[in-house]
Length: 363
Image 1 (tube, rainbow, N blue to C red):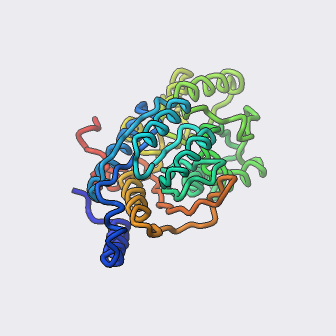
Image 2: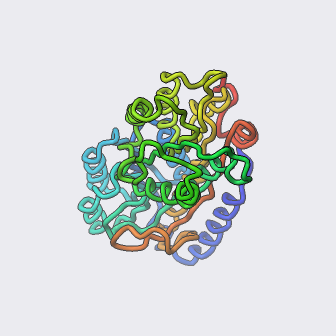
Image 3: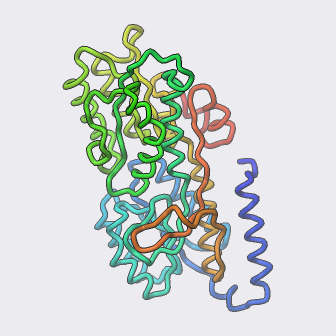
């Protein structure tokens, strides 16, 4: 069983306060009794999203709520149809991790007309006023942690690096608002080194729109890394790769190994990642992927479920950010959870000892 975290304690306190406040209001209690929550998740391709869905169901069950959990196979049209179906079935609230943050405007108008509150889960829903709250991580800090890891382990921070050093840059899916936050956070750290020519992007691909990876797809990232290596690095080596997501990192490493990296004479570059997925943690243990960002999705489900519980009792949920997440129609109030940088030196303490990953799942 996971130890009680400060976040869990804070949410428990807010729930207790909510309960005490609601004791005098029978209508609030009645409005949430036997409620059903629709959960729209993007894909089952990533174990991370399977865990997110299961965690949400379990957290909502703790509040006494039923769930309808749907996965969209990374298809925006499928997700819209699933959400519309859940609205027609009379769900009392929606929790949505969007496939495409801009594809939900019309269906969320229907949710608003039915007085169904909407919680954006991890990915901000864009271009609509019909989203009430946002549960996520500090996404800019994710990018900062990835870039800082690169800068520190290349020796740029302490001045021991033999510059110039070569780096290639990857970004996430252009239809996921988080991708821009990750990118902006990482560039705040890396751009000064690039501007000073301590870091060189030999491919010349430095603009966000040039380095995005649709649907965060590992095979797409591998294909691009293969192209860049073949066209740019015939007579030189890449020293670091900024990868925003573990699934992409695995593809990038596959491309590097096919070009001879990963030997004693040609070691792999620093490769970052995100989500602490088991294959990447195994890769870190094996000395291939360098780092990942741990975002405890159990905490994310905890926050999102507490938001649902609050809004179903007609109360404001616990939030800690009211300025960062402008979706083009409104600034969405959010609760941001802090991410953690993980590498070979701390993965046991952070991931295994916390119960996030079972040690038996690693070889």
